[in-house]
Image (cartoon, rainbow, N blue to C red; front, side, top):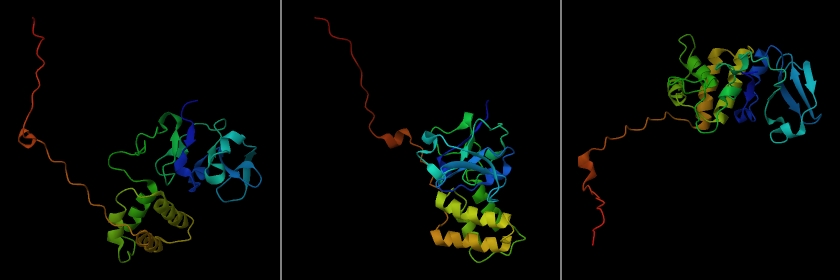
Length: 217
């Protein structure tokens, strides 16, 4: 079946679990290290187990409980979990688009959207005219205009989850986002200067090599 969801290494030590909430068949699992069992919840953090399995030892030997796992036998290829606005670190891909390591760009990002959904959330808050913005909000927005490290994204994801769960207002979230920027010491990144065009005048001496035919005796 094409379109099966694959969770990649970007999930390590993040496990945001927004994907668990959108999965209609609860095929995304966590690994319980103490019980040596895989389990999926009805809703992330609910404590209500929907499914459980004994893991294939080889499948969990490397990452153990640091990532989430998709049971590909149960996945229906519904595409819900790998939509751009679900995983805050862009860790989930369809099997046809799993990156090969040659590029850092997410397959589901276009040229205008180089940052992940969690940073887009932060920018939306900092640019929301209805939000009472704290001092430093403008500089924080500039600092978040480029993709930041997984540590920054993970911390921002916690703020987003608090807003989603109704524990934090957007005004409070703006303060927390600015605090994250200050804590990590982030600043706006200046774009690199454009490359200069090299012309013939810049080359200087041009050497030509002519290969002559052998001289006959």
